[in-house]
Amino acid sequence: MTKDERHNSIMQILLRKESASVAELSSQLQVSAVTIRKDLSELELAKKLYRSHGNAILIDPYINNRSISEKAKLASHEKSVIGYYAAQLINQDDSIIIASGTTMFSFAHNIEPKHHLTVVSSSLKVSETLGPNEAIDVIQLGGTLRRSSLSVVGRYAEELLEDMACSKLFMGVDGFDPNFGITTTDIREADLNKAMMKAARKTIVLADSSKFGRSGFVKIADFDEIDMLITDSNLPDKAASILESMGVDLRIAKL
Image 1 (tube, rainbow, N blue to C red):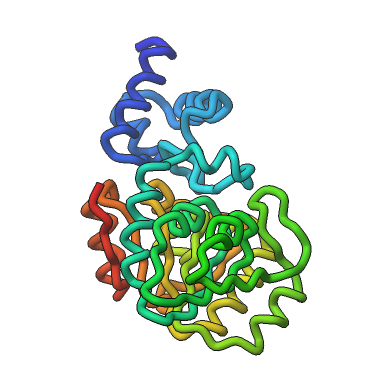
Image 2: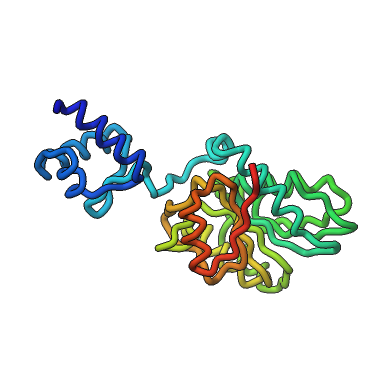
């Protein structure tokens, strides 16, 4: 078997299994562990897989802090469907917190207030979207602008939340992993999200299925600290079973 043939075989195995250990690949391809490690190093350099703790997996589980324009292009239909599902959870005369992110932007576009709605948000784009609607009172949090998400972070935003008691928090995340919880790429964002959770009676996480099994730089919360997770129907059945076995109130928005 040539090197190119081995590389193709490794990728085919990962497409079927999502992950494989060096020992497994060595046994299946009948080559030494040293050869497999060299192959994996080359494939990782080519950004075709990610290596972690002796395993190879098909995609990098660690999220880069992409700009909002880049993120908006990813899973746009899934985010729209999730946003529509979440918007149906808003009640008449509700008071809600909306965190930052492109999923929150899709959510905001789907909001049709039932009589009156109060929205507290860290996202400039969310406030811009909802601001013209006379049925919505928008409270824009202040603080340091985070350019990658066009949202604010910092102690000024966190302090303002200390005086608030909202019914629901709708929060986007960069990854949700059964072993690590829900995460983001920015520690300041995580701190603000935690303050938002304290200011809301219920925390609802909106995340498209591509974020399952992936981790940002810093944890926001464990799954037992959130009340609901809304994702799309591309989430594998196995992943759904894992989350539900952990007691997660999992809601699937049909594509």
